[in-house]
Image 1 (cartoon, rainbow, N blue to C red):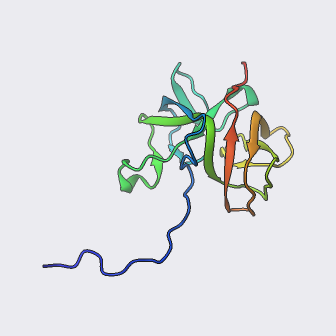
Image 2 (cartoon, rainbow, N blue to C red):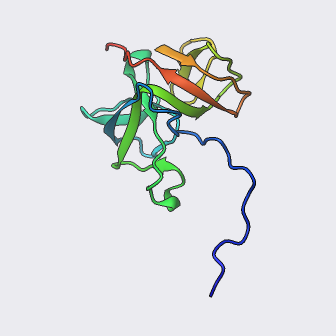
Length: 157
């Protein structure tokens, strides 16, 4: 009989990008991916052209609709990405693990980069938009994992 697994790590990683951190006040929507290259996990998602459409990032703060949740049942060959035309799950309220695009600290405000959907606490400007009611719950260095909380108050268009 073939051995499937013969060694085990003493520890496991605590989280991955797009993983819901806990279910306290968690709420999510489903949408359809319109971005040609798809949308990765743990990134800002914006309103697409269709009523239930979703695109990576957004051209303005008012376009923000949530953060992409990791889906463990996606085809592994898709490389942790929701493909164009597929259903995406988007967190609209609650806590989620994301990769910090800049150093963040607990309590910092949250911004997303318009073209990439990467989240950080950089100052808001023409390409970085603040997310109303969002807060970093844990800190991280650039590229590290941190918990981000969405307050559930989506901006009005």
